[in-house]
Image (tube, rainbow, N blue to C red):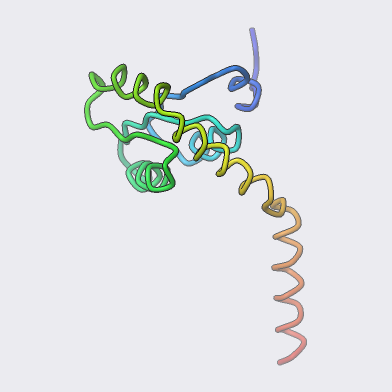
Length: 115
């Protein structure tokens, strides 16, 4: 039996991901520079799908029967891989969460000391 496996290990060698568009999956897949086909299924998924498509890293579908054709389109159109790589570079350039938290806590402390 295998326990939790970080998504980055699962994406090694993957050319396209078909997903329902959850935030964690979309961010992980973009961070790995992999384009997507997204069938958004509720909650925040339509927004995640819209944003991934807006940057050119995903095709959004409305019916699961469209997945194969959409995946072939993504694989056959280099601009999707280019956009996913650009997003991966942007994500890699972001400050880690612990640094952002430290900055926010410092700012809160400064504001409290000013009042």
